[in-house]
Image 1 (tube, rainbow, N blue to C red):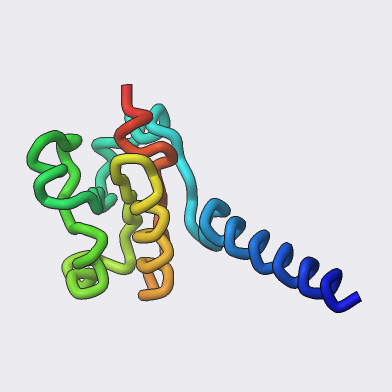
Image 2: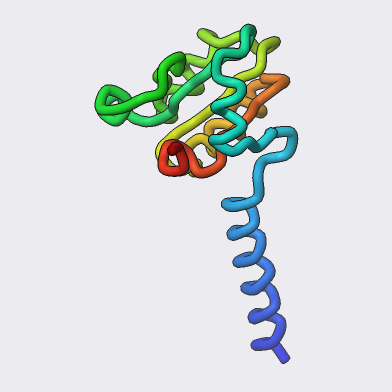
Length: 121
């Protein structure tokens, strides 16, 4: 009986952990790279790339500004909380984390690019 209870608790914890990693944060919009291409030069939007400076220097999309994920909290004041922020990284994982950070900091409109630059064609 005790082992069954422990197994259920472990299953619930594992499920919660995986869901928190892969389910988009509440209030964050998700777009594809195809949608990003249509919206790229939209006025009033802030485009940020949360990859490392070296990754950004090697290749980045025009119009995107580099604010590495590990610097985002300290540099969030450089962005307007009133304007939409579109976030990209290499695969979509760091930008998803960055989106969560921005929402917690009070940004109203945050959009994550699914698949990141790996999905860019």
